[in-house]
Image 1: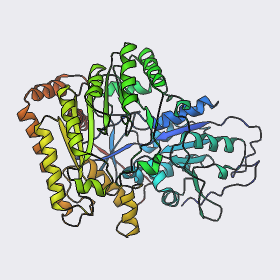
Image 2: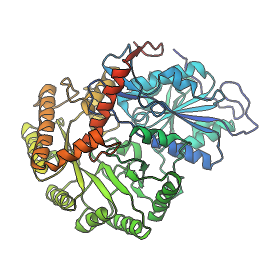
Image 3: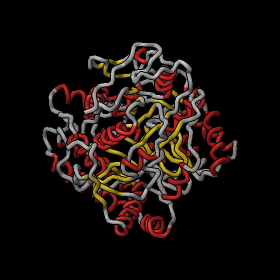
Image 4: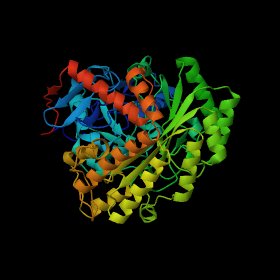
Length: 548
């Protein structure tokens, strides 16, 4: 094991003994590890890494021009491999050694993106392997997993020096500045670390950027996005050159199954419409984009903002497709707003009712009015927008009756024309209120097995040994119901609306990258994966840094 790295209190000397009083701008590298899935997963999508791009943009605005982004996924989107220690797990992207080869040898600070807890065992192994090559660099990690489990991550991965919690741009910059100027970075809010005695330290409150319009646009290295476009990779649906975009930060709601309150707090902030329009026009001119996708958790909350945004898209003559693939609420989506969405090119909209049971919605603090949600969904259908609705079943206190209500409501939506109805089984995700409840009750044991099983819960519809804590239905029962409903939902959709069959065949088998739904996108991705594996058999790598 790599020993704990003590935090210096000497304002002039770094922990490795190097005097940095000259105040030079340090060389920073941001690393995104490979994509982790299972052999039979229904999703092997990979998207541009927006988080590191935002951090890089922030650093560059503040004079750190030597910022490198190393994206193990984007560097080889058609490479699949496995680790001997994790049978059943398939990994997309560069192996560890090739990823580390891309990190500049003179890197002073190396930041790792750790967004998803399901990928933590693989990301931890990458961080550990990187430490062997860079024994003196400052190792930092951020993302939703790190924000939710900072102490666990530091103790589980001794190669890590510091965790950046929550909204990472400014605390990461402050950390790099302190490290560069030999100041005591332990005073920077939003950081977590182990001190010289091994005690866990959590610095200050979770910081939030006061004015989101001051956050620089993401920095995309030359040729980075083109790799994803050439491979037909994007979030949700796809056209040809889709641009990831964020128009807000945070979410004002407190759903108990969601990790957003821990990551962003419940403070919700929207960017100025003019700034968003300027960013879109910039991408049109620089990249000739064909569409943009809003990655926000809750992009549409305020009707006045949405209407103004659409009006300015029309006024500026911006003729692009755009989509909301993350799942949105219905409060601001009335007939007027949906008409604007259609007129401005919105071709895909994902709703997130989560449950068809009012009792369940109340328990999980999902403030949804189902009749109003239904009205909004059906109006969007009349406007001709392709729709998806997301549901979760198997919450701890949910009864069979509650689950049946959700199935019934979801099936009604499929019959009424919703193109995709997705059903997932609940599992307590780190950072969520329900996860904390399960931990306090001693029902969750954090280890590699737990993290890797999260993958199956969300992407592998053939698995029946899911993580679940429902008192009335077993994991097997919930898994069977989930798979049965998914098959029924799509069958109903294609039988009642046969024009979709023609569209799907055209997009999947004859289109270059076009995908009108998530199903089509994943179907194309699965076929591509099978072709790649037929040409190049899966290679199993023995990696010394992987825990056994």
